[in-house]
Length: 517
Image (cartoon, rainbow, N blue to C red; front, side, top):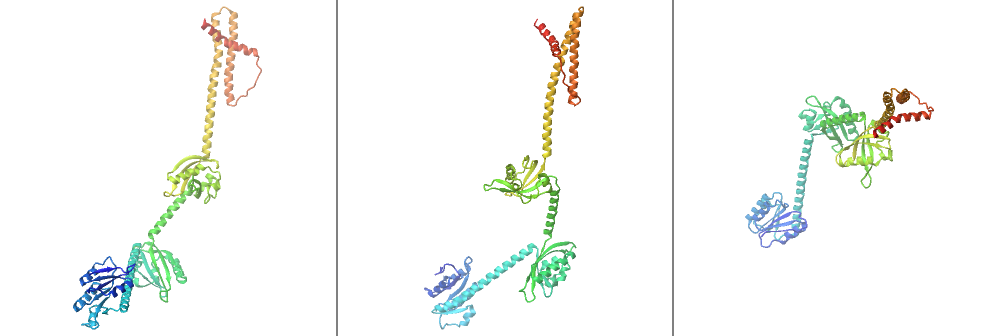
């Protein structure tokens, strides 16, 4: 019969108990329970071996007890086969009589590590079980530690290999450096130099310009114990130079002489990236400073309700001051510089930061007394509060546009007045012509009446004089417009004005009378 009993809240391990007796010794279960182990019972050797083979998902067996029921061959076979199946678990033979029909030495030779005589003594069982279980636990912990150490070492080696990191150690007393294969390859040395080469051999591979500062840093680290941190160039097999980063620290516990241990990292890609970044930064800075338009990068500020109510200047170009009149703006807010600045500017830039959609508009900053043509866009991914603003001061252009609009309105008004003047002038010019035409017709009909002809000629003379005056007035108006004449008021006889009016109107009256007749 086979049974497994959990005798502790937490399984510490398992004890395999092989016994073919109808009633097992209760002392075995009592000791297992007290020590926190699960007891796995097996009535036959096959059952015990089955437990040994199919326990992959359970804790291993910490102890094996093989029972003796009078069959010597069966006992020895059980000890040997259980020992072979569970090489790491100690095997104890139990139920052996005080005077067995075999020697204990032969049982030990079969693989048993201890013998428990029948009847089993609980104190002796506890003592031996505790000894073997603690030994098993210690060995298991050591195996776990060794496995973890091997895994850690393997991961570290994989990381070092993937990161192209070279590992080195320097014996300060002898000045000799030991390096791994990557270190030897990086400095172009011979494979045998990895077991120890003078530090000067390594310095010979460093760029001459980088040797003095690197030696100073290394010497300071050895003298003071400060971390060693250096960046220098190393010659490659093709004669070029690669940038490397050397890091190290003093290990004062490594013998009485002291050791320095560290790594060297190939930094060529990083250096190239830094140079590209620096070149890009220089190009950006040159463009940023040289551009004629004002440029600024601002960080939006919000009130407790999340509404944009201000912004802080993070960066401005030289043209910014000229375009705004705001000096020393970096680090300050717009409200601190212009307290009454219109809130619509904050709302517009806040919308750009929130949506990421750029805007282009023309608006007046009344508190600055300027007009601007503005382009604004968000800097960075969604959630960024930074906005770049490119703007042009168009105040003069705006004033010019307004002045041109005013001039256009003035010209339109002048054109309207001239049109009215010409219409009035045409009417005034037409009035003298009517009496003259009527006079000519009367002169044709009254050729034999000298008195009538004389009277008509007087009228025609006066109307002709009036016509000449009108033309003179027109010329005077032109000269007045050009500022070439002055108006001089004069007294005019009222009778002359009335006579001229009657003479001008008389032909029209007669024409109307004839039309009715």
